[in-house]
Length: 239
Image (cartoon, rainbow, N blue to C red; front, side):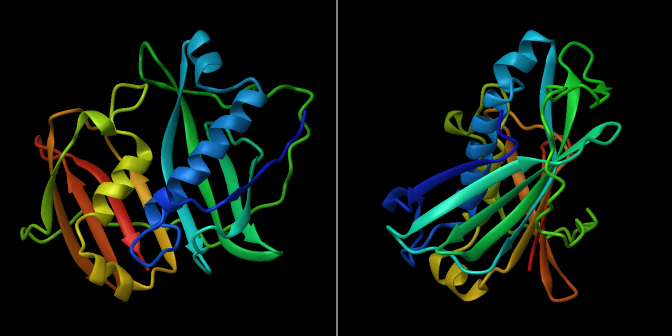
């Protein structure tokens, strides 16, 4: 049983943006996908967790972008779980090419009871024989993002059927894709994104129209996706 999972691949055209490099939102998707595979190997994937009446809940994710890989560039994506806390579990990621660190990230997870929705202790989530890797990545702390936004709207997004995952709500990577879609291709080129924090606050469902608002915070751009009931669904900081 390996405590670290690595997948080698070439960056496909379908994952690239208008600059012929891996798109920001597809970096989130890539890390989520390799985490899913590794969790299955460890016996704590979605199916196994549902069999125990439990569900993985994403709390927040941070990715630091050092260089976006080019179309057809060979890369190695790696992931490994951190040592669990009382209720939270960390998972780390790296994306490398020829020994060069292209991107690194981390996700904070929690485990919820599918019946009650209450958080469950993280102890015992991983097999007892697994030797956890204490190496970390993206060591900058998660940022705190205020949900106090001006009333002006950056845009609106209606949750589509293609955004829905096996949990019946909007997929984590779909949120990031929707946020990035608020900007024109020219704007995205000019952003030169070096870091992105995403905080998941409340689930969204097919047919809901989300309002997107933004503000400048200390040289960074903060965005919020607001549900029809006024609750904040997602908070993002782009640096």
